[in-house]
Image (cartoon, rainbow, N blue to C red; front, top):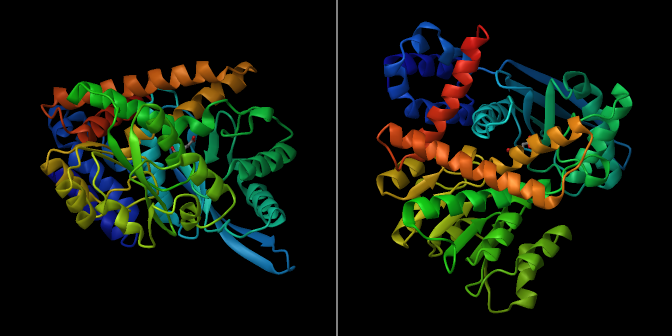
Length: 444
Ligand code: GLU
């Protein structure tokens, strides 16, 4: 690594010794941009890297709420407004018990680069709380969301910061947050995306991340292997919104999705997962094991890691960060993996990514592959600004166009640096250049 990057990374480690997710995402980025530093002396002179790796601001606040038993409860809320060079801060809100400043800084950093890859005028941010929505009543969720918004609303706005959902934040929660935002600001405008389609949301937003993953996979299969998804064996980790819509689209394109998972285990069904059944199980908050009642020949394992032992040609990790470790990818490669597309944000650890690249497995990083969600969020903002709504087909066609263009642009970038198979570098270099130039033009 270039000494300029070494020195910044060293300082970040001293400043934020416990922020491992954040440091990991910065390191992944640094590993890609050595050559860019060598070709443009202004990057070091302007000290832009030190600037770009730190968020513009982090808003942290207490969220008091009352549970159904009348007991006072407290969580911590955050919004990391990472970078505004290309447009208003944009990125989801996550409610999971492991949310902390490090996780949100990593997600905000990734989002900034992801959003720039979409080609839409979007900056990057992320927010959330360590609130666990599991087993909460509707009334508890409503009280929590309202309290969360009492603090957060003053930092949001359609030209300032536009949140959406992320893990643990359903459309219901978005509705509750948007409803409170509206009461507090006296405005019904596009300050949230992922809204219900009956009050300003975009058709196709629910499907967007999953469909986008498959559009990008198809573009890559075509470019590198001159083939498509017909009869390709796929495994997909997770069974949330992203995983389910990835699975639906993959099946529609002729792939055989043989395994999916959730935090309570893995289902392996060589004849092909019944995605509608899995969605039904999830909607009813049942354990994934219930799948066997309909398909007794499918195999269930409590150990979520078992999914990586299932032979497949394409793996689509769509659950959460760092779910795929070195030992897991070794098994996948041994069993014939050809391609790995990150559906979640940074689901692959750094050493696992290195292993895949060294073994010539085509790897598409999440900041490119899962950009379909935020892309349709961008389209939702456009529709809100125009006071209109487009048909599902219009949105879906625009999504397809954005994902295909995105793939081509990171491929061309990788190729121009003599690394046609290194799409991590392609994505990092291209997004960095776009943000850097905008920051420079605006006096940083
Ligand atoms: N949470 C999603 C992501 O990680 C979507 C963000 C958005 O639509 O603003 O990209």
